[in-house]
Length: 608
Image 1 (cartoon, rainbow, N blue to C red):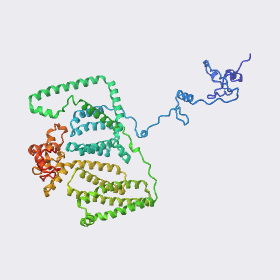
Image 2 (image 1 turned 30 degrees about the horizontal axis):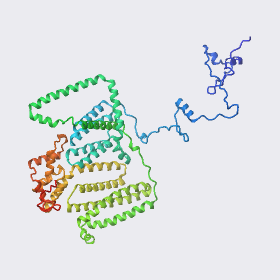
Image 3 (image 1 turned 90 degrees about the vertical axis):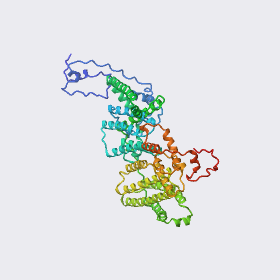
Image 4 (image 1 turned 90 degrees about the horizontal axis):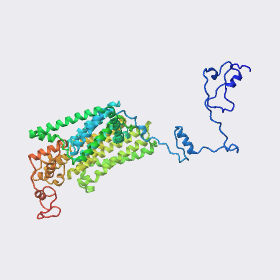
C-alpha cells in the first residue's frame, strides 16, 4: 500500500465529497493549490460530517420531457410569509391581500414624542378639575382660569420635546388669551362666541407654527387631529409611571385626603362663626351638587381630553405646511390680462358715479332714480359687499394662472394693484350707504356686524397691496392676525352698547321715535346707554334686562364685568314702569294709540 503524500491528487480526492453528493452552487470550495493543505487536513480536530438530505427524485414530468407548471400564487404567498418576505400586491391576483400603505398625512407627522412629563400630567389634571368646577355655571373669567393650566401643559410638553418659543408662536398664544378676555368683559353671547372660536384657532396655530395658506387654514383646527393620540400618549405615561412608583401614589393620596379634610373642617367652623366669612366662602367656592354630576363629569372629560390634545400637539405637531397645491399653468398675456383690464374699466365707471354721491351729489341721483336715502342705501350695500368678496376670489384665481416672471410679473402687479385700489373705493361706498341707512332707521346688531365685516375686507385688500410691494411671504399669517384683531376689537367695543348708544342719541336729537321692542332684548352691555333715556322709555327698555339679572344666580367666575356694572346701575335706579304703561307707549316709543290693530280699550293683550 503506497503512502499518500499531502497535497497529492489522491489525497485531495480522498478528502473531497463523495461522488454522489450534489454540488453546492451557493458556496463552491476552491481546490487547494499544490503544496497547500486542504482545510480538512489543516484542522487538527476531525469534524463529523452533517447528514445530507437525499437527492431529489425526478418528478412525473421529467419522463415526458415537459417543464413542471409554475408555483401557484397562494403557495408562493405562503412561502413568502414563511420566509418573512414583504408582500406586494400585484394586478391579476385578487386573492393576495394588498399591503397597507401609509396615510395621506403620514409624511407630515413627526416621530412619536417621548414619555409624557410629570409636569404635563399635573397641568392636564388641573385643567380637567377646573373645567368641571368652573365651566358649568356660564362663561366669564373662568375661561381664562381654565386656559392657564392648559397653556402650561402645552409649554411643558414643547420644552420636553426640544421646541423653542418663536415670535409668531408667542403672537398666536397672546392673541388667543386676549380673546378669552371678551367673555369676562361682555354679557352678549354673539361676540363671545366669535371670540371663543377665534381663541381656539389662534391656540391651535400657536401649537403648530404654520406659515403657508394651507398650513394656516389646517393648523387653526389641527389640534382636533391629536385628540386620540393625546389620550393614548397620556394613558401610556400614566401606566408606566404608576408601575415605576407605586409607593409614591399612596403618599400623594394620603396627603391630599388630609389637606381636604382640614379645609372642610376648619372652613365649616369659620363659616359658622362669621356670616361675612360664610358669604365670602360661598361666593368663592363652586356650588357642586349631585344633580350636576353628569354635566360636571362631561366637563371634566372635555378639559382632560382638550389639555392632552394640546400637549400632544405641542410635543409633536403635524407639519401642515407640507400640504402643497400644484401651481396653475401660466396663461398667455392676453388670456388673463384682457378680462382683468375690462373689469378695472367697469370698476372705474361705477366708482365715477359713486364719487358723485359721496361728494354730495345725491340730489341729482334722487331726481333720476326717485329713491330715498334709506332705499338707495339698502338697495346697494349687499351688492357691494358681494362685489368685494368676488373681487378677492378673482384676485386669487388671477395670481394662480398669471405669469410669474419677467415683464409679465410687473403687468400682473399693475393690473391687480389697480383692481385692489378700485375695490377699496367700493368698500368706502358700501360703508357710506350703510351710514345713510343707519341715519334713517337706526343701528342694529346685523347692520353693525356686516359693516365690521366690510371694514375688515378693506384691511385685507390693503394687506394684498402691501404683499405686492414687499412680498407675500407673511400674507397668510398677516390675514389671520387681522381677522383675530378684528374679532377682538369687535368684542372690546361692545356692539350692544354701541347699538344702544346710537339709538339713544338719535332719540335725544329729534325725539321722534325709538324702537323699545328691539332695545329691550339687548344684553346687559346696553344698560349704561339705556339708562340715559327719559321715563317711561328708560324703564320700558330696562325691565326685561332687570328681570334677567335678578333671576340669575351666577357665581363670580361666571359673571362678566358688564353684568356687574348693570346690576349696580339697576340697584341704584331700578326700572319701575309696569307692563301696561309700556304697552300704551306704542311700538315707536312715543306714540300712545293703536298697536297691531288693537284699540286702547283692548287691555287684555300682553306682548310680553
